[in-house]
Image 1 (cartoon, rainbow, N blue to C red):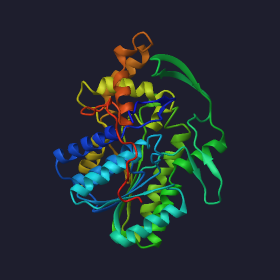
Image 2: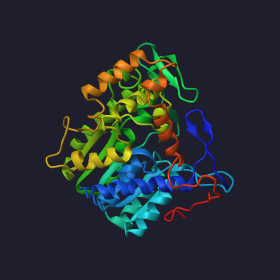
Image 3: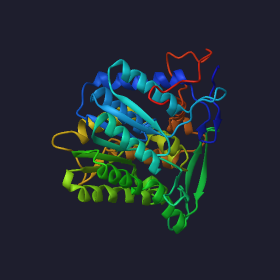
Image 4: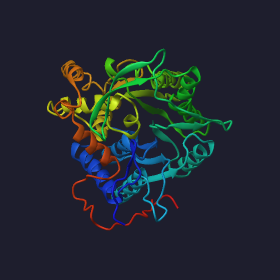
Length: 394
């Protein structure tokens, strides 16, 4: 099949298998070129198929030499439609890991479910015994609770409505947008989906099953951003979930002190992801940020962020912490010189000067790249196989 990108809203409904493989290959080559980093040696990544989760798995394996288990929730090809990008990414990861003699197995299913937790725990017992690093990198729109209720997250403000600028990246148009405040129930549900409750469920289940090594580390991901995005993010419904995530990190370290567990939240940089593309205001901010950071040599994608996180923050000696559980790799984004330039551009930006003040082309490049499109060394006019198998998934 000749595969082309098909865009619907803020997602691409197709993925290019060879492009995804090339993307994974490039990330592996990046971390190998940067040299070895300290890492856990037996690593579980929950949400391992795209974005920061995939980059974490690549860094741990190919820069840290780790054996890795990845949990994902992706769609294989049905012979007529392509698989999801995360499926192809995982297939490529396992292919390259096997070539280097690295243990790599993956489990596909709903990470919120008890069944997947049990499958993962059984696999750890059978193959690894215990793990010493657990990365929690889920970004889901909804969650089925243990009682069967399905709750959904929302991207809304809290308190009162908020109006500012946003961009329609497809039409390259800057326009005003008003985001209505979330209800208390919506905030509560967003916390259930995107907060730390499921992270704690994972760690508790793993501790009970005795598959956490003494002195193990666990880490989840968050974003804070500048004051410009706070009404929409940090002080919004998603921010309430991230505050819960932060508090969960402190709880985990305290409650599992007997095995010396350390829990952290890594605050990462604004990037183009499927999740961030759906948040009003954020895509425009991100495009401006790219325009500012790239000429300064400060721009990082997921793999650059995760390599720096492992090397300079998580496993550095001494560990570089913002407080008792926060790791900050958004430090370059929040530099005064960067934010001053972003603020100046934000005040001036309009449809007419969008390309002058924002890197919309760069935004689109990263968006398409998430799905395996726009990669160098890939012939997109070629007929390719879309039914790709993941070696560890029968």
